[in-house]
Image (cartoon, rainbow, N blue to C red; front, side):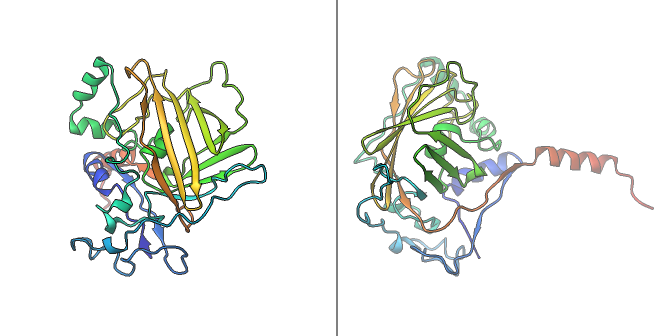
Length: 299
């Protein structure tokens, strides 16, 4: 058995110390697995401290030829996709270019242009507050576009002629997006994933989402949003083994202008999603303390 070592282990370590929130690591048996295999199989943790361990095998996947297409002629986005260009999770490759979703020197990504009041609100967040308020620390869904841009875990896309389904290993979250391009509801109720409607522009699927629950963040460090946030995602598959994701966020209450991400790479994997649940144990710990205070020792 091999732990699927978390890509954001350093990011989440602080959160685990700050609040009693437990995330169960998913477990994967490598026996019989197809596709690229990390070099640390057999000793997944013991050599992590060795400088450069695992990096020689951290190579980008080949393009793999043209993408598959569905019967209606659209590019088929279906598959299990891993963040970065390796097509697999391997924390031993930390620092390798193959782990990155984009090269900031080639495709620089601007910082969001916050309204002055929003920038000040974020600036006032202490490191501890940022951890305590972060939705993922409180086991809330990442939402949209967080299901892509603040999610280092693999995802599965399932495409039909009528919809695209996104299944996230992280918290077993999912969303189903109709692809017929019909209009948004007149006044949809806010949800974590919002109301997403998609249409095709050539080989690019464009997902337009509104009514996103404002408890979600757009990054790890306090980028909150308003009820006016409007998210436009563009997803394409330029080759068999690569998926490209780019998002534009409009939020006139929080931003002075729309923000567009760099194109981010995901690569085709060859293993199923694992079961991952974040369990908030604050209530359990409180009950344990109450039990310890009130329990009468047995004679």
